[in-house]
Image 1 (cartoon, rainbow, N blue to C red):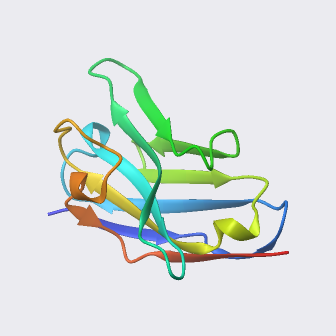
Image 2 (spheres, rainbow, N blue to C red):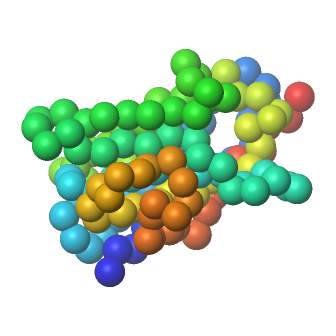
Length: 128
């Protein structure tokens, strides 16, 4: 069983930055597929970014088009922590942000159905 706890959300003005954290417990963190999703009012939960082990010493990353170039996903395997650095935040980024984990890559990493474990979410609000 994997438990995930997010933190770092808050209120920020447009153009500002936030860094989200997600601490995981249980399993082999370094091998997890890890993702960030967000849920905005009136919308479905959408993919933001993900990282997965490339069976070597580095990790693949993938981003939604809407955040490419502004958000950066990273992981600290020694601290069992996933991060999402968010720069140049815009009001459309307002949402509850969730981290998600899947212990083993099974062919997909951009859909909610690709992940078995979820955090409780952290609210990000961007004012104009």
